[in-house]
Length: 193
Image (tube, rainbow, N blue to C red; front, top):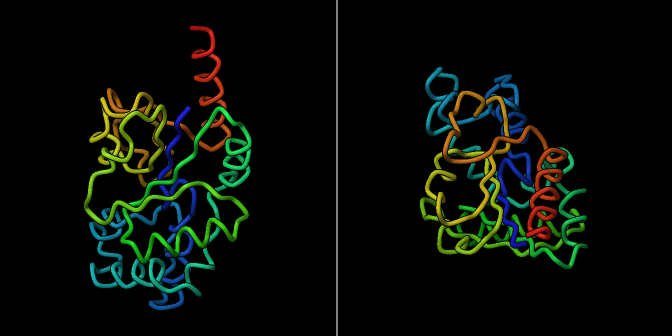
């Protein structure tokens, strides 16, 4: 199976690092699971400039990016998927080329080597994902643009996307444990056809 995973919010927990930096730089305590631009901006917690500064630091400063932690169990399951020769694993990110390179370095520091493709900010992932069996993101709008391109779309659930309706778009999974189980079920289903 061809498997694709978004980087931020699916493989790497950038929200946790953003929350930590918001405390360090601005003295703001923001729970990591609530750290999403639309929520924070709407509530007036962070300005657009502050959010951009945090993102810039995480994307382009290696010492900051090195502090990022994986999403719970992401590395464990990516390792298992990479060991299965029937799978190809690709991480697809909307980061620019420099930030994509830093993301790739981070994945290598976690002792995993999935292929990593950066499509750049604001660009569609559809061309890269054409023909994929599975793609997982934490952003419903990005998944919506992939309906009909990828066979099975999944939304990794976080409190910041809990209100999003995924009907007709994707299947919501609560964790990497659930995601791995769903991938295994799809693989079993495919082998029985």
